[in-house]
Image (cartoon, rainbow, N blue to C red; front, side, top):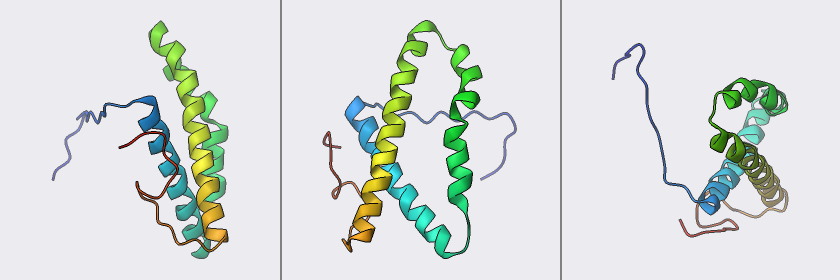
Length: 116
């Protein structure tokens, strides 16, 4: 592998709304596990990441303004879906951990809206 200045990588998936929800939900579950492990190591990554979410509107506004009108209309609802699914995945994994349920973050052990 080598570094190529100015390289652009395109990483795209065909996504339905249900697949997007499930992906964000799993990311939330993984975020809980990440922060739990970081806390055990004495690292306060939660505050840093909470700041990212709090500052998100300010960060994304310049990018949103450059979008065409169709994407401008579609983006805010998708951001809400992302944040909601992510938060619910975070809380779900926290609940599993606190109630002694042995469940890893994976595609077969979560509430699902669609088959993968």
